[in-house]
Image (cartoon, rainbow, N blue to C red; front, side, top):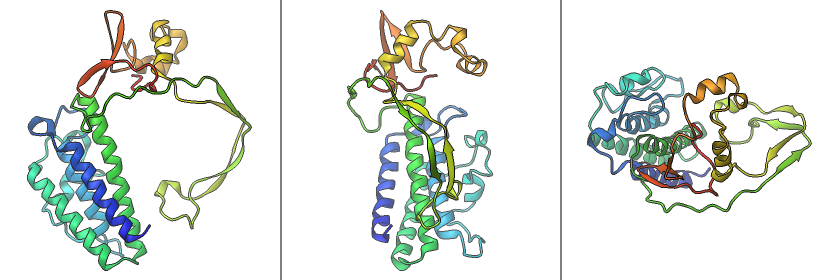
Length: 272
């Protein structure tokens, strides 16, 4: 990946981060303490901390320089800061957090200009880029979980419908993982090795809402014989996917902060 392209992608990722969080304020920056999400304010600071840690502070001998934000490690190091404590930390306010993001990104972009051929450094720039992209996904599901507005204000897609049937695949051997000369890879992709798959079949397309609704209407959520013990305990007392609701004989779902008619041709999501 060329440094010029990396610079643009870093800027694009940051614009997306801001777009997905720019309307949130006050209590929305924290939300309730849930195991499946982070406080948005903490997550914004963590994105900057991660980028600074790997792209600016890490030395070749694996020692670390100091952060430009006092106490950053005690606030944002996700490997050391327990998840359920993140709501109670003395976090910088939103303005200071965004300033931290800006200062870090400016320094990374400047280093890219100075060291365009530093492969060791470029690896960590890509790591930080993909990390921020993953948090963009997290901001989406946080907003869905907490019932915040759709940050992109999208129209509800109609979908193209089901594609019934399975595809039979013969199995065989393939290379799983990253080859040593394949460019960027995550550490859990090392290294490529041969894996043998037995013949199998897979659906041609994702299950649609309409198809899954047949299962719901047929009492699938109340039929113990259709569930493993683990699955039965996992679903608790659900009657259908988490955000579905039946009103006057019509099934609807919550998308972000709006309740809309269930799109029958869309892939089913949030099964519980």
